Length: 79
Image (tube, rainbow, N blue to C red):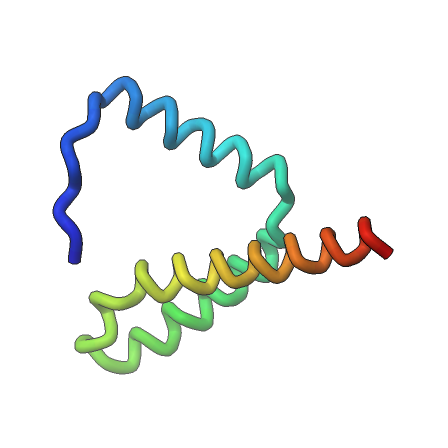
């Protein structure tokens, strides 16, 4: 897809750690994410041609769940 741009390993590590910390702190409905990941894995296991898209699909589902969670939380705060 995209070539990785060169980034200092120390900076990359700090950014990844910060991302993980924020994800855990934001409570992005991990049970739902895990359920969806299992469903994606099961679907992909039916055909070897689907395997390369597993990670991309799981990432996109994770982002959608986070976005809906943020939208829901924002709606509750403004109401």
